[in-house]
Length: 473
Image: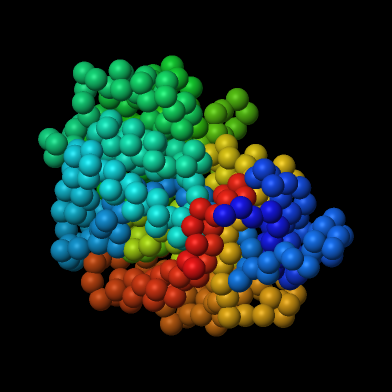
């Protein structure tokens, strides 16, 4: 199905982080998959003349498709079950326990290419159904599975062949002799869509990491990894590198920060570590960015990324799902949780910022902003429709329309999470020490589950370059 024009309430993210809102707006395409006009409907209608009457009315809000800069494809079948069977405060923390108990076995199944292709197909359908059309994904250590993902997913997806060689099952260790050959072949066939993926500093030692950095440099590829997710994970990882100043310093000295690294989480950071990251995006640097995952960070009891530190140091960041540590691939759910955990704690946690951080910000980070992220003329004629029970014309600001219209969240709900609010004490503890798996953490995760159930069916159509990629009808 080809779409050339659409009318409806429109959100258009801007490079400064603001969002333009048109209660009666529209987008006009050229019939070849490019935008030729967007904005207030009267201006669009004037370009169409008598043909304006035939333009369909959207079934909800119109916004740019989502981009998820941190997600794990092989964990899609176990989304929300990362900690299944993990209780209390296991040695090493719940993160490492969940990896060993649930995640590694799930990833191991992808050594069978047929299984991997089925998982990738389901992942593609599910992400499109939630309005996500691209991003940066982890696959596994298996080259066949990584190649399958790059083949099956839209070119807006970048995918990483994972590096791992210690503290993981034998069946999930990097094929050491073939690494250079495999990365070269993937880079030859898929170019910059290949991301050299350092699982995390506990699972990759310095020699393997330096090989990954060398390959990324040779083929002009970026890298991705995890950093400072939980307190126990940080302490354990740093014990493996007694000659490094910090977890972040491991990546600095081994060269990973020089490869435009996407760093997931960045919760348990020291001031010195923030300085290292800021230096990685400064003059002459290659541009590190952070994947901020509020749902995952709550679901695993990890903590909350200090948003104001990131903003003050001008470090780019995007909101991401981190599936399977999130129960859903919905970035609408991520937006809600972002507003909750930062409520009353950061003035930057606005509805407009949440929408920017799921659309234009990740598009900029991943080099997709010439195609996606906003409705500028010349970009792909791509959009999603999100249904709502609200009346778009009742909203006088973008923030109000995003919060109460798009997300259908009332300000009173956010106040429950502010310091002193009903759930604010739990969020404060999550920030200070993390929360063990148990009843208190379940109070927060139950709220996430309710939100996920509420927003999971809100996207009704996903359009890519003028063609319907997915529809709920």
